[in-house]
Each structure stands twice: as structure tokens, then as C-alpha cells.
Image (cartoon, rainbow, N blue to C red; front, side, top):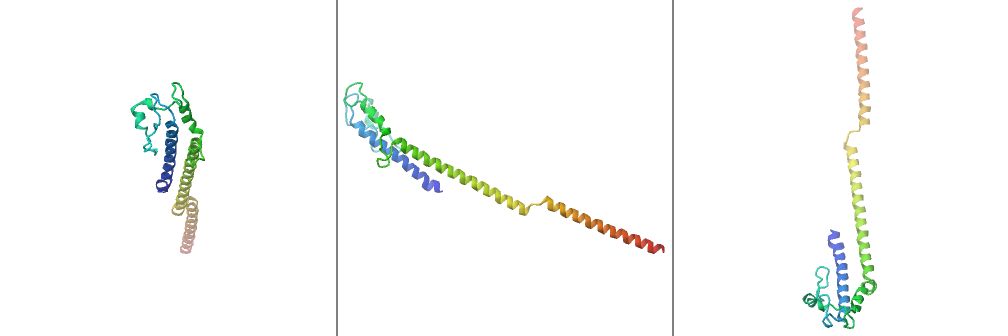
Amino acid sequence: MEARDEIIPGLVDRINQLAAGMVEEVNLVHRTGFGGDGNVDVDFFDAGKTSAGDIALDDAILADLDNIAASFDGNSGDNATALAISALRNKKILDGGSATVGEFYNELLGDIGARSKEAQTMAENHRLFDAQIENRRQSVQGVSLNEEAAQLVLFQRAYQAAARTVSIIDNLLEITINL
């Protein structure tokens, strides 16, 4: 329940933060470039859809691919804006300007990995605890073969002693009757 109510929503928020940061920064750079038909000030992503679940291209891009602003100066073959968008991966644009996309993503994966390892360790501890309790339960309710063998030997010796006593009494009675 903790994973469902706290951990997973926190991770979704972090992924949404990544998506929102990328939408904002890519759009900032993209608006400064020229499209194939000379258009400027066009968003690449739909600015109203900034979560990881609904991120989408801007309607202008979907309507006409010439609206993709790859050029910085409007000349054909210039790809400076595309390179600037690509360079965003090395710019500290997330966590209030303190992390690059790669750093943010690696931190997120590290957090997920640590939580996963913690969950696996807890599950293994619970399995071992369960096995230990089951062993103790079996030792209390189960039959100990060593104890049963010791009791069997004790009863066998008692039977032998009783049989010998009866045999001696039988011999004494026979001798007494024959006198």
C-alpha cells in the first residue's frame, strides 16, 4: 500500500517533472528557429500537455512538418536550432537548474533500483522469518524420532523386567507345588 499510495505517485511526479522540463526547454529553443517554410515562433510540443502521460507534438507541427524549426538563420541546410535542441541533454534544466536530463534520469533510476533492492531484501527477510516460524511450529507439534526411540527402549526394558519377574514367580510356584 505504501508503494501504491506514496512511492509510485512520487516517481510519476518525477517523470512528469522531466517531461514538463523537456517540453518547456525544447519549445524555448524551437521558437527561436526557422521552419522549412520560414515560419518562426512555433512550439515543437503542445505547451498545454506537459505530463509524461499526455505529452504531444504541437498541432502546427502535426499539420505541416515544414514547421519544424531546425534552422537558426533561415538558410536551407542550417541545423543550428536542431543542434541547440540536441544540446539540451547537457544543460542543467531540471531540479531548479541543478541537473541535466541524464543526471536527473540516472538519479531517478538509482532511486528506483534502491527501492527495488530494499523491497527484495524485505521480501527475502519475510520468507526466512516465515520459514523459521514454521520450523519452530513443526518442532513443537511434530514427533521427535530420537525421543520416540528412547521411549521405545525404555518400554522394552520394562517389559523384559516384568517378563523375568513373572518367569521367576512361575518357577518359585512350580518348585513350591512340587515340594
